[in-house]
Amino acid sequence: MIARATLIVACTGLFVLQALAQTEISALFRQLESRKTTDSAAAELLQLGRSDPKARRYLAIHLPPLIAGDHRPQTDHEFIRRQWVNAVVLAGDLKLAEAVPTLANQINVRSTPFNLNTDSPARYALCRIGDPAIPSVQRLLNDGNQGQRISALEVLEEMDSPKAKAALRDYGKNGKDSWVVDRVRIYFQSRPTVDRGPNCM
Image 1 (spheres, helix red, strand yellow):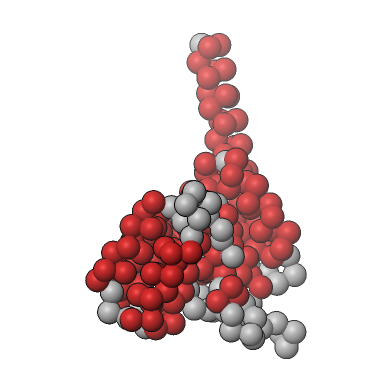
Image 2 (cartoon, rainbow, N blue to C red):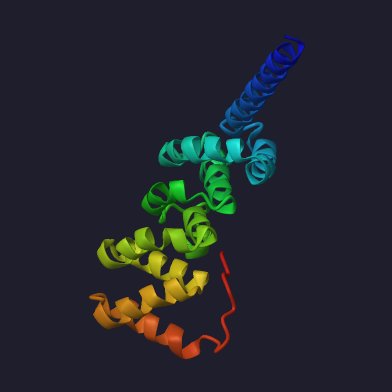
């Protein structure tokens, strides 16, 4: 009876700890959605997501809807909603394959008014996720509008993995956008002979 009671107490304690951990993650996620606390929450969630599988699963479920949501600025001092940028970067830094389809849809959303390709948080995140993102990026390369094709091309160039290079070679042979085909040719002519690894911007 004593052993059984000890087991019940231990299981109850574990359940309470798990519930507290879930509450902490949920609270941090709400802070991520708040403009005032989003930066600090993003830093804490990154650490949790890297160390706690449950936190990672929570973020894999809850980040994609946030990324798919409104990215318009909330103040006159913002070009884009800071919470959205943090959610996108967090998904990339945690390499959440679950967020790839949503990130691909946002690949041309810029974080500054200068409209530079390097200002795309989703492009950075897809590059960070790496090979699991290639099918979605390749679909943009083949079927997207010109802006999406250029962004997809640059994601694959920045990944610089064997699978990414295979996708680029395939487009170089079969692609319909002559400008992108030329860029692929230049990429293979100018790239170093030794793989340099990902260079996500």
